[in-house]
Figure (tube, rainbow, N blue to C red):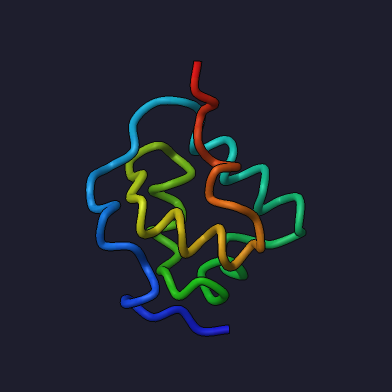
Length: 83
């Protein structure tokens, strides 16, 4: 599967705040048995970008969408539930 920049929504340019996004991304990656390297290759991001997301340093909506597509989960799985 390939992901092109045009397939990522332009309306989600701002960072997503709150919740345990890093933990949810890590759990989803581990649930499918992917290493960081496997996920990076599958979604087209660098290992360092995956590490930044899983350490809470980055939560770019475009990157989260690419990861969700690669893991075949809805991006909403990474986001906190609304109260």
